[in-house]
Picture 1 (cartoon, rainbow, N blue to C red):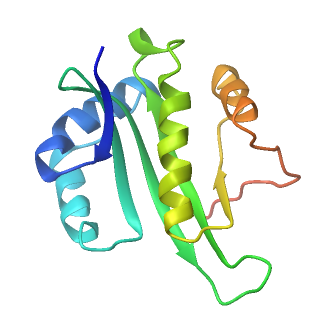
Picture 2: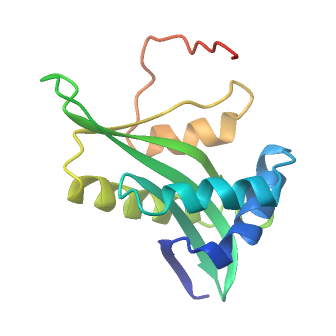
Length: 145
């Protein structure tokens, strides 16, 4: 088993979208995803991390680095779409991915990593807690525009 993690390239987007569509029961459009990826690929604070096993993308997360001017916040990271394909779960792949994420975030001088996860994703919550994440007292708000 040759598991490796690296930043996504444009050629990876089709597989990456398949992974996230499977994991989150989404229907992300490939053309739209490519447009967004092309816009963000030059921004060193927008990172799409993929996990490959024998050349197949089986895991993904988006890391957004948020530098601030505020003392208590400083620079932090937000994770989106943390996922491992169902057939590859329970093999510590998410743990390996979290180690890579932590390394990247430390290199970017982040003081913390944040993420939000829907209430029904109980196994994912267990993974996050095992990785040292804490549940904070917050509500997630959204305003659709």
